[in-house]
Image (cartoon, rainbow, N blue to C red; front, side, top):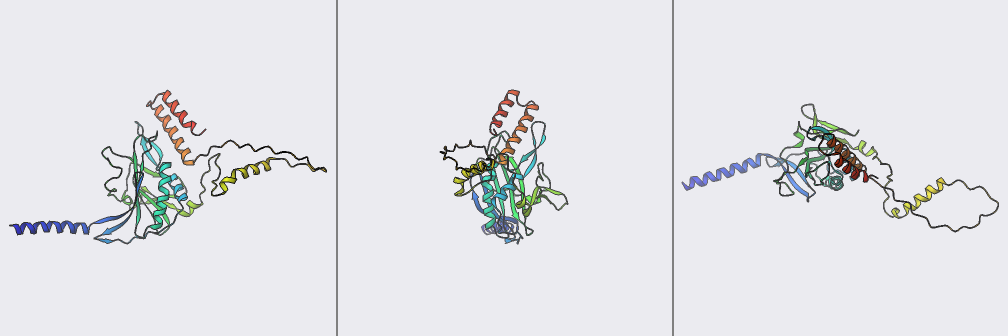
Amino acid sequence: MKRMLVFFIFFIMAAVLLSACSSTRWVRTPVVENPDFKLVLEALHEEGEMVRQTYAHPFEIAPSNLAKLMRDLTYTEEVGLLGKEKKMPVFQAAEIERLAPALADTLKTAADSQRIRFISYNRAKALIFSKDRKTEGVVFVGQDKQFNIAFNYINTEIRMDETTAFPEDFSRMDPLNINFSDTALLKTAPYLAHQIGESGDPAPLWMTADLQKLAATPAVMPAGQRPAVSGADKETAPTQTRRTEAAEAAPAAPASAEPAAPTTASPAQPLPAQPVFDDTVQQEIKTKLIYLKELKDDGLISEQDYNARKDQLLDKIQ
C-alpha cells in the first residue's frame, strides 16, 4: 500500500513537471523594479526551449525621440457619469521623464529574442486621475526597424487589495493577441500607425512608429520657450542673446568726423525671467480645463468650485 502511494505521488509530481516544461511561457529577466515603474526582459519558451524571435535588438534610440513618441500616445476613455468618450494621454509627464531613458537603455542591452515588458505607476492625484493608476505593455523593434508598443491595459485603477507596489506577476495575456478593448489608441502623429491584427482589423492597443519619420518630426516649441543650451554655454548664452538682440534692434550710428566722447557704461540690468513650459505640461493643463468644464456642465461641481479650480490651473501658465 505504501509503495503504491509513493508511486502515485511520484506520478503526480512528474505530470506537473512535464506539464510545466511543455507549456508555452515567457521567461523574464528583471531589469528595473522600483515604486514608480518595473521593467523586465522576456523571451518566449516552448517545451523548455527558447523560441527564436526576429527582433532588431540590441537597438539604439534617442531618449528624446522616445519621449516625443510617448507624449504623442493618446487613447479614448469614458469619463463622467454620462460615460462621455474623452481623449486622454497614455503617459503623464512624470512617467515619461523616468520611463523613456530606462526603456532606451534596456533596448540597447536586449537580445534579438527578448522584448521589454513594463508597468508604469501613475500615483499623481490630479483632476484627470483621482485614483492611483497603472499601465502595462511591451516594447520591441522589428526587423523592419518599426518601433512597436502594445498595451495590456492603460491607466487602469489600482485595486484596494493590491497592498504592495508590485503585483505578483505581469498579465498572462500577450498584448499582441488583444483584438478588442473598451479603450483604444488614437493615431495622433504622422509617424504612428495601428498594427493590423490577424483578423484584418486594426489592433486597438498596438501601435507602430516609423523611426525615420519620428526623428524627422520637429518637436513643438511652445510660445516663450527657447532651445535648450547645455554645458558651459549655459553661463554665457543669456548675455550673448541679449547682446545679439540689442545689436539687431539698435539703428546704425551716422558717420562722424570727430570721435565720440567716451561714455561710462551702466551695469546691464537683467531681463525678467520668461516662463518656459514643456509642451506636455501645457497639454495636460488644457485637458484638465476641458474636463473641469465638463464636470461643471454635468452639474457634478458648483460654479464656485469650477472658478476656483480654473484659476489655479491658469495661474500655472501665466
